[in-house]
Length: 444
Image 1 (cartoon, rainbow, N blue to C red):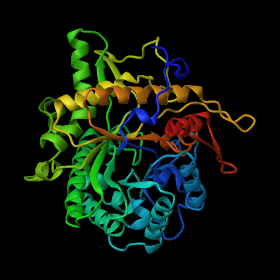
Image 2 (image 1 turned 135 degrees about the horizontal axis):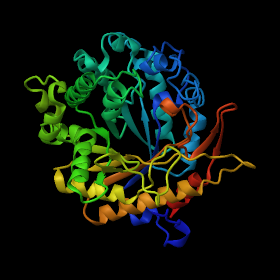
Image 3 (image 1 turned 60 degrees about the vertical axis):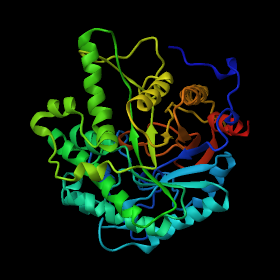
Image 4 (image 1 turned 45 degrees about the vertical axis):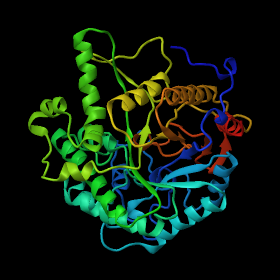
């Protein structure tokens, strides 16, 4: 598949979307904040993970990252310069509760209050995520998400943040991508805490979902004005051919990647075929757990980057497709297909595209970054989103990932997703062509 050239198509602008539709940009705490040891912030599992040799591609950490903690006003001005209506950010649990329970850091909460104040002053909606993977290390020392008590601690933390900010932000997402916080982190070992045990991973997945439900219940008690929900990374799994073995492989991967999280949240049950396939590794589900997990959400955040193409022998990478610097296929129609599939298969709350973007090997030359591939990626996916909405799928917002280049987890600083180029030596920010394109798109 060739990447569409936006210059050869009729211009798509924000005016093609409903007037109420929200366009924004997104980041997460550990990836941009830095100040890892300031104002009482405790260690997270990512601080620990980064200190383990060989875990991060370039041997780096988020100790400084984009130094956002010290450059808050500059970065808020940067967001405002793009013309977006919304900013999605995450709160660092160890900055608010250094031990993951008990004592609360006023300095930590004050930072996020300044952030929200600054957004309001610039006419930008704050969209808050409670957990984007930076679990306080003391909780990991007690078992992390494998320990059921972590779900209770998460609900307490949610209450702390919601009491302070819950009536001043547009939305609160409990979790970002629980598949990554469980399967990628406890089974595949690629993310903190870097374990490789499927049984532990499935226990972690269940306790993450339970933590979501308990946090929702805690926040509902506060009668907040914020909309409450959760964010999932969803990857459509297509069969490489109509061969029954390929179809079965795609169905199995859909179960482990998508339905294992969608079904408990939206149907109050785990998918039976996947449950059976996991055999003795399935989690211990206590009476009432699924009722807590499946309580109504005000929204469901969808993070989409690419699709999976499956054969009986594994993942297939079509030679005719183009790929991002992460090795992910550029496949905009997968977003349209995913949204239409969700609309057909589930009773849904309103959807929001909470992350969508691409990494490319950007180069700063003469004060500019010419990232035409990213422009084409964004344009193609916004067109796919618009097509799904025209087909009746209710989507309320779109957040480009990410505002700026940052610490890209196990890849360190070796992958750039930003609309804004960051020189990590000087911390200078430079708008890439994609940022300029997004700004023009929003001007219409």
